[in-house]
Length: 266
Image 1: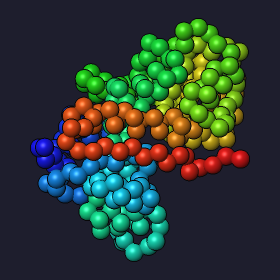
Image 2: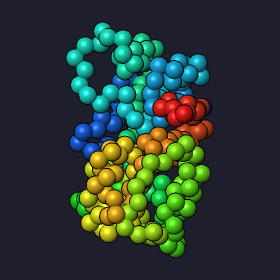
Image 3: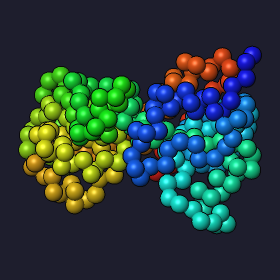
Image 4: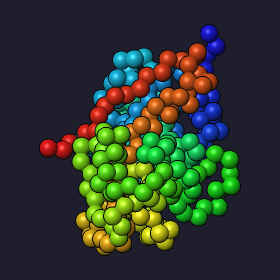
């Protein structure tokens, strides 16, 4: 069996979901690890945690491919016992490479937003915001807008989303119309795009991490629904597995993490 290096896997991913597509605040890409190392196995997850690193070691893998980067902000010291530092040190100590595909994967087609739209029955989708990269092959953008097959009662549609994405509860506020047809969406945290959804005259905007006063500001203007950060993105693990399987399933073992949302509801 031909050996595959960590660098070869990263190079192949960059062809489909280039790092140049990530947002300026992001920290996607290789966080730690040696590209020249032979890859013994790939562990795919949504969030990197100490338990994920432990499962990676137990499965004899040396590359973790995640959606969310472990580190977003600059770190000056590695002496504290917070989760990020503990996890990073465990990965480095055990020679585990950490790679993430975050907002570059959000913006890809297929990617977080296009897959979300497909799952929720939103058709004829187009980017929610103007972007100079829209003409690049495989690029869609952060957030989108499209139409349902037919106008649907808001509560009926939200119950459909709740079942489809296995969401415990959805916070929402009603808009100007009893029924909705034009739906804007942004997987993960996308409340900064509310004005864009309004500008496009969307009946409803689906995203996560919406603040209380943002809900109130939208009342009777646009239906606003918080469908959960984890729930609106976690399916992307299956897509990453599919991407990696196309080229590497015959050369390295692939594993997918099954950790549920750690933020609980009662």
